[in-house]
Amino acid sequence: MNLLHIEALADAPSLTPKQLATKHGDEAARWALMQLDLRKRATKKFGDLANKMLFEREALEQATSLAVARYHASQFPQGAPVIDLTAGLGGDTLALAERGPVIAYETDPARAHVLDHNLNQLPYEQTHWGSTSDNSANDSEDRTAHIIIGDGATHLINKSPDLPKGAYPAWGGGYLWADPDRRSDTGRRLTKPEDYTPNPTDLAAKLKDSKLAGIKLSPLLPDDYLESLGGSLEFISHQGECLEAIIWLGTENTKPKRQAVILHANQEPTRIEASIEYLQTTDTPKSFIHDCDPAVVRAHCLGTFGHPQLGDSPGYLTSYDPAPCPAYKTYKVIASPTKNQLKAELQRLGGKVFELKQRGTNLDPSKILKELKTNGDLPFSLIAFRVGNSIRYALTERFG
Image (cartoon, rainbow, N blue to C red; front, side, top):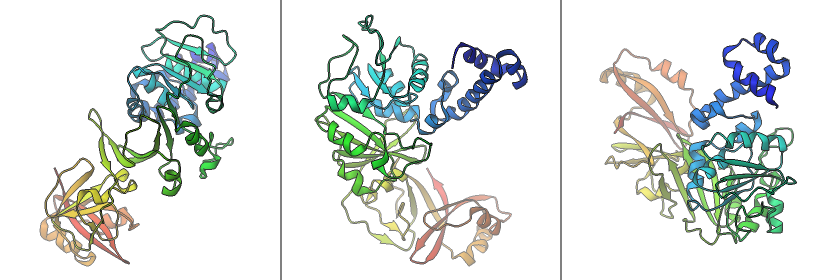
């Protein structure tokens, strides 16, 4: 990437691909068009800021969305320096820089250059430092983000990061963040945590004596492995998807042993602590069915609410009262017919099914909706749940 590439990117929205190649050359044109495509994909994660950022395809797939990164950053004291050990193209680094000083480590010089560009889209003065650069003019207290090309884990081992003189207090077991790389050198997604870079087990051992440190991991990792890392365990949900597990370590960590955290736009997160209460079950829907957030299910919080589970479908609770809660969506039960009775019941009610909600049933939604097509006007959500080897149904309306 050079100035010609940036100039091509500026022209890309207004020129055809052929015009772009004629003006800037084939290589710059291809790069600019790729960036336009990646910016469109990145809008979901970074909003309008994506239109100013630069991306790499693989790094974008792994990047933390800005809304989730801002939650991570909010867990550290406002204004306190935080070391981002695995910066990438900057999802978490951007959010950390919004709240205070951040030192970002990135091993790939090209990716560090992209990170530097992205940080400069924030309304702060940014400075990029290479691991061997001249740091003679680094004493400005106005600078918010510093990039070091190097391995953050190596600096952890030495416990004496090669930070620019005067930039921040020396190492003292402070505030740190890490998002280990879960891809191989060829881009293949890794499933074994011992293959991550850096190794989460080694990271946890080095971070346990910090003030506060977070390690972002996959929520698909088994409980016994996540618990073996120590500290507190959070499962983070955003826009209806359980995105990550975070291990929190350090002397200032006061979080529960395990909890679900549900992020909302312009609202405080909902936190649900895991329960040791016995979760009862029932095969028959009561007046209301509660469809729990996936982080609540993954964090084993279902027993917290005091409602029995519906059948053998974890995540569906049922109760006689609506019991509103931001940790689940509530549906009022209108009828509980058998599959053979469904269409007749819909016709009697003058209704139609507009969506199928299911857990553990593996039904084909398009096939079910086609089979149940009626001329009714009242819209119903059909909830399918499993009881042993059988599948049962409830016609419902969204409540609240």
